[in-house]
Image 1 (tube, helix red, strand yellow):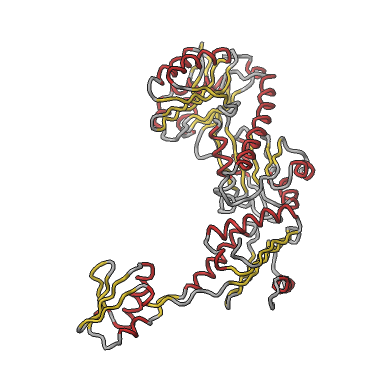
Image 2 (cartoon, rainbow over the protein chains, first blue to last red):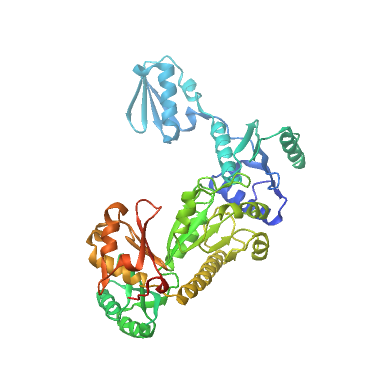
Length: 193
Length: 312
């Protein structure tokens, strides 16, 4: 847990809280999310019942551009793109098709894409944004908290964006007091609600 | 002749001699696993002959160990079959009990989750009641367990062992009326049980299950069964050849006072009923044959001596 600056699990039952601390740690570790969380506060009250998790993320890694995984070699009348990592190949092809049309894009083999007859600067190709990992990250984070939260708590509200997130769930309808609870927990972490 | 449950573990080479020996001594093989070069036999053997089997198995590098759970069917009851309970801890407990010879089934409830919303339906209740014992694996909060255990055990007549995160004393205090066994400090967790203290907890669960089953065995011994379930298994295996075509790992599941036969009830119930055990006594004479709530299987409930006046 060294990478998290603040990690607290607050629970009305101390033993249950200990178990939930372990569960939170295990799930975030399994989903490879510990490295992106800066501060995390979990609050559980089984009497109400309510589960709250709120936190602050570290600066999320920058956008994925073509240059991050492709080597662009300009030749006469065409550009050969050598791919070093296939992870973003599919979204890249989709963007190329939309932007240049399928006639100008060809993929002769798994690690090569050829762009034909384009009046575009290779530098410009390199700068094209392919993906925003933070979108997937927030989805992963919410999924992880769905695993952590007690299973019967099926009424949920999630808020995320701008490197902050909050997750609140209960068996019963969530009220205005739930928002106050989230704000209170943010304050405990020393953050503006 | 007192039959005791044991596990034989040895090489595949000449293991048929051990199988023949157990059968000649009047024992029964409940389950046989062949894993690469190893054979595991879960069997009932006469208590006095265990040493003889050990002696004969010695040159074959086979070993005989006590397996108190052989011949029992255990239901591991969890609030749902979601990632919250599977594979840890529910599968860990089910798998560990299998290693010691039990046949364990997982019963995940349709609406067993939560505190206020938890419930059990008639199918789940009946399926649990078809087992020898139910191990309830509940969560981490005292207040939730206190609230939902009376609901989840409604109509369950088999002995219950309750596992939860609060310690044993707390579990005993919050469960009204009391259940048969308790194991504390085993709540919901989401990592594999591999540390020594966690494995010790699994051993504790097995010890508690064994203790509760032992009490049930004593109860059965007061009014003995008309026929031993293991013997009935042998009779069905010999006389109902259709069972040999069933691909399930345990086509005949031995229970403490009965047998689950994995053949369709409609076509085979009458065949089973008429199957002769010995001297014209049929299975129908000494047992009740009912449809199981598990698929379309048959459940054979062996009647006690007091109801039949026969022991075969």
